[in-house]
Length: 408
Image (cartoon, rainbow, N blue to C red; front, side, top):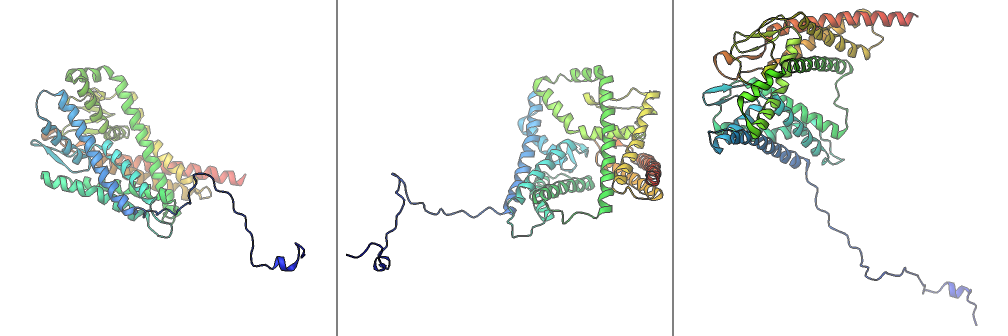
């Protein structure tokens, strides 16, 4: 009898294999067919169109709230007004009746830019790893899909292109927001600007933030001082609940414009509420002012008080902030280079804020209600000189202190 460990047993062709026992009710796993992923271009186009629809619904809803509180008009008139307000938020000047309006509600425009940013960020998540798709292409396609419905509605209503420059400014803001959102989604820095340009850009942006903070402080101070006047203007309109909500949202839509106007006031050049009027720390001269509660924060007519001149320090602080941000990236620079760089950043910051002031101005009617917003030429001179001189002096001081520290 052969042994169980014999070679003939090991060389047998028949082998035994153990398989795990199946559980009751188990089924053989079958490969599932995966659907092809949605292209990033499709997501970008759909996101742009949806942003246009959502922003129009917001404007139409605001108009319907105002219509509910009004005694005249129809739902069709309210929707038509909401559509024109939507076009106005995209920089397209409209006519409400026979009144031309070109003042862009930048609060609503900023909301649209945020939605565009989120759509661009969602689009780049669909980019496959092997493809090299730039953030600029994603941003342009997203904004293009948004702009096409706006242009179609504008041509359908026959709205004139009153100020095409502001429409271009709004599109530029939307493109920048879309590129920023797509760049953050890609997480790439290959298209980053050079070091010197990036430093100057950060300094200019920091100066804008400083000036806008000063403008917000001016606005809050005016509202707190003239709170009773603001309440009286609100009660005189008798808006009711729905009308009060609509009035609040309408004022919030123009709140960024008012902050820029207040910042121009802090820089000393002031702003105008129509031809022949001026609101500045040195003095205020008012004409016909719309009965809007937010405008109740305006200072009283006449020469300005001495404490109002303290707001003029905002320009010097903004120039110093710009120089400090620029110097932080080049601490080993000589004092003359630091002074020149600070002065350059201050002048560029002043010119940039003048551009913001132009975008935040416009017309809200005819005759005396034209040219509402900052006085651009005085603002350009005062902002450029104040921020430039402050930046030069701050750069000189920081350069000398840094030189002294290196010697010690």
